[in-house]
Length: 128
Image (cartoon, rainbow, N blue to C red; front, side, top):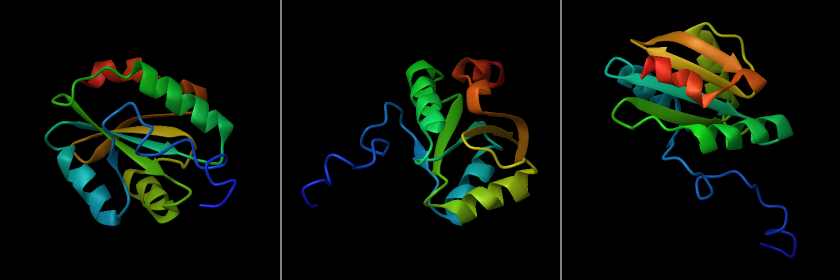
């Protein structure tokens, strides 16, 4: 790991999350999320690990999200590491790429999206 590995390691990650995220790490994961949106509402959260605004919005989202898993599924995308998936989301669901960004899917379509400081976990209650 090296002398600075612990000091400069990514603060965001699967281990440090307060939520039970599903992670988008392949096109198959995205296909699954889209299919799952036919059964219940799916939220895609696109996060940039290089952006302090994105980090702030993510932490705020994690601290306020309170919708039960049987009502909604939440997916996390590290768009720096998985940029092709981010591009596919924009094309497939006809949304302009933003970072950070929250996209709500229902029946395989985007029904709501927000970016930057407009992302608010409480806004999702209307879809649950």
